[in-house]
Length: 379
Image (cartoon, rainbow, N blue to C red; front, side):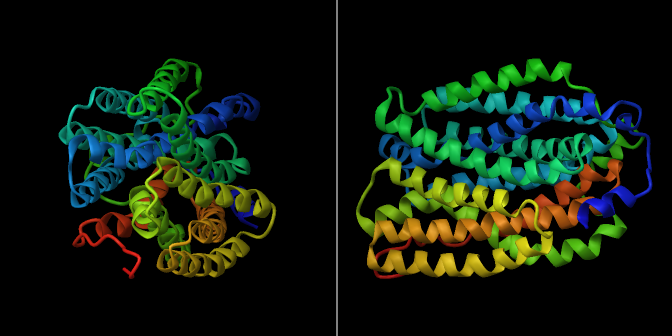
């Protein structure tokens, strides 16, 4: 199946993993997985805090939408400009650069005093996450062609759940709600930047580094048909994920009248943890089954969410989030397992960035639409 397709690909380009034992390459798999998790945890950390930011600084819901749009477009810019950079420069330098940018963004969050700081932090965070998504994803595939797709699909789910729910719990029960979560993440990113020096490089440098920085998407010829096949359901999944990360707290407040930050964190966790469980359940099944499950559960979950919003029923909203989350995780796993084995080692960074870009750009452009927050009377 997908893994056998990968094994049948002939080796192209010079890869350091060809020269080193699999055991040594896989010894840092946990570090790469944890780093990926932390990047996505950081992306969802502001979600339960948006209402607190609005109360403290008095900006409108339109500005809130713009804050997320800044993050989304910065992420897309990183994928366009630096998505294939790790194929030429190496995985470690790109991951290190992403960690440095993320560290600076955490500092901006911690010392933020108005909405301009928040936008600057999200701008840097989006670019860092775009670089990390392609480089870390490719490094995971380099290290283990079997577990790599599984970790690539489950780490974002767990990360977003940890970031949103963990921050919501800190807001509810801990002091310094606007900074404590970022302090924990800052410590993690600093430690990861230090540890990265112990991680072996998995690809050798190739000429064409500066050429690779021209805004473009690099999809190998043999991967294009599969990319088009998996994109529709994956675009739908990440459009829903982007909506939950940006506007689910406002949606819940408008629909139920409850403004607890914990609800926003629980909403993201319900979506992503059910997605993670779906990934674990389907990890040994045929990849195409994931796409079928995703295509079935995503619209069903959205329908339940719409019903919950119009009825103002919080518990039903969470039921819909769980159902949609099963579709979210299933489709993401199926897409990755079907697509990534079609790429050679030196093509994985570019293909990962093209996959992320293609899956997330509709969510980014949605945030430029005129602001119209939902109410109990409808959308």
